[in-house]
Amino acid sequence: MDILQVQKAKKGDKESFTQLVLALKDQTYRIAYCYLQNEEDSMDAICDAMEKALKNIRKLKDDKLFSTWFIRIVINESKLQLNKRKRAVAVADRLYEKHTHTENASLEEHMDLQAILKQLDRTERLIIYLKYYSGYTLEEIADIVDMPIGTVKTKLYGNLKVIRAKLNYREV
Image (cartoon, rainbow, N blue to C red; front, side):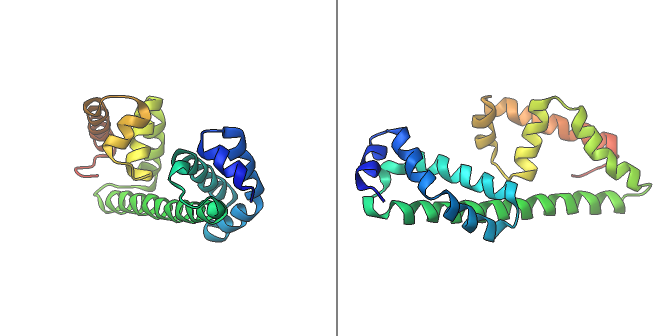
């Protein structure tokens, strides 16, 4: 690891940061893949780790430990991806259970959930996915979609009412 490159990266040199990360690309991919067992999720974890590392590189105390520091971030992001996956599965399971236990529920109605979501505006659909599939807070979602939190709440809860009505749900 080139200490000079780490120092440049800490001063904001993105090219130096890129070179440092590229030097670790194979190693970090293998680590992420060991956790996630999926190419796309592994790449997402690495990209998220790169964002966090770039944002926080000035906090790195010992320049010699860049690779260890970055690998730790990749591991943490891989664990976050696993948790997101578990939450998405849990939400889908809860929706499926509630829907299948509702009177007059059918598999066709369950499949309608995806069709209803596809009918929503892209931003409104994104808000629902970020909240229920990715586990973001309303404040984080407001930052991501660049809207006031009140607007995010209105869109989220309004669309949930529409979805419930279309699926004959009383609770989601």
